[in-house]
Image 1 (cartoon, rainbow, N blue to C red):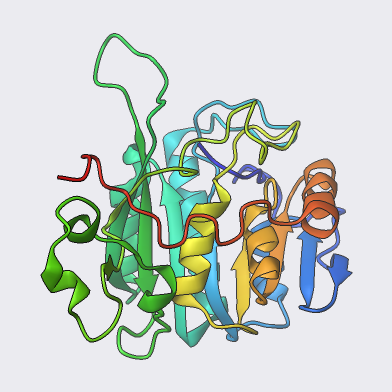
Image 2: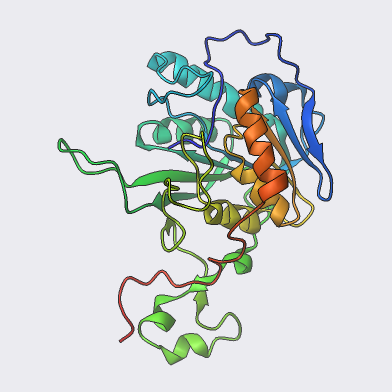
Length: 296
């Protein structure tokens, strides 16, 4: 389910790839590096000043990425995971937050490592989609974990009002009490299981779909994260740029952003999306109802 490409952990830490900025545009300042995220993060001029990180790393599910061995021995994959997590922590500002999008088989290890590094878990959210891959030997996988951590629980940026959705009390029951609140009548902060219109996997007939990218996260997912956990002008970083969703959404909402991508071809395609296509579903899912029953 990864929206990313990255080098295998067994690759040399430094090869002939430069860690200088390869793509840049202003208003707001948006940059993309081509290289190993571990090297770039270590040399990043903005170290210690990143407000928000969103990471959708390779899942090690034997996906045929262009320049990435996605079938590493488990020990190597976990070593690689710990390495990029640590470097992400190092570039975060003291008030910074970090989200990691990861499947079942690595979620627990990442949670434990981040806690051991002193990060504070705010939420363990679930991105739920209706079309999981068919299987006969067990239940169909229809979710990915969205792990929300912060360096400082009290100092983090939190804009709950920016991502409100219609409550079931309003959408289903027409409860007068929710409409009598002093503010945000009929609305609520989203629950920690995310689903609804525009929240599905980005398949071939989806207008967000980018050709030659293995997987993508929907724009509404990044929109929720970026609006809730950063302010206009803040710096958002994605260490696994992939199809460019993070930078596309950050730019649409006035955030500065940095992406890192190992594959030059993938980076070029992502940059085209960021600068020439832009966000296709800005604000479209904000405030919508996720009720699963009709109004009573």
